Length: 227
Image (cartoon, rainbow, N blue to C red; front, side, top):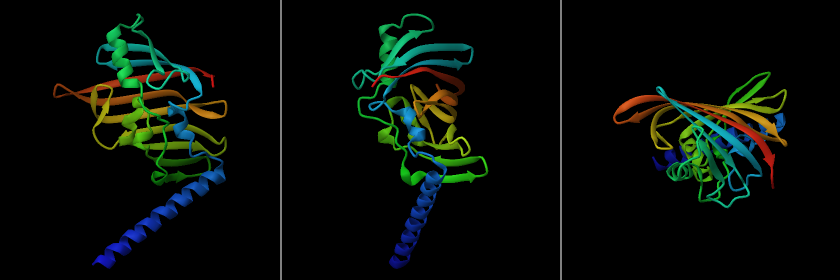
């Protein structure tokens, strides 16, 4: 029985290893970087400053936050809230924003190499599923560690066009407990890197024992290399 278990484990390892090699060989053949989907999630090693507008729709309530990211600032202070619903943010709003955005550790959005799997490969698109290493994610994106991502690479243009994420179980996003998440990320090329252009999230959250649908749109702009 022990020998059988050992054989099964060895076969599983070999199979997983061969699948991983196949993915990496295809990525190299198509000129696709393994770091493409994680580059826009860098905090400590980020080289670009940018602005971000977040619009959250919760029933009849709409909330708009304008903030910016400054990679020159020390760890824990890189995300800065500029306005809340068109007004100068209060100390309470700044504290709440910083708590949900600013990481106190070196975080740089790294994909778990063992998680890459080929979803489809046709004439135009090479589609892969993947998962992020939790300890590598900035605070704002730590929920992605409990999601499965799917990256859509255009083989003809050698670009990462979009990524989608769905949750594998309940998540904590900001101050919500999310039972269902559908997230779409589109990208733009900036200085040869794939940076996030727009994120849209549709979430079902539990609040006071009720299920509530929330939509959030995040628009990134004005990427500037500063270091």
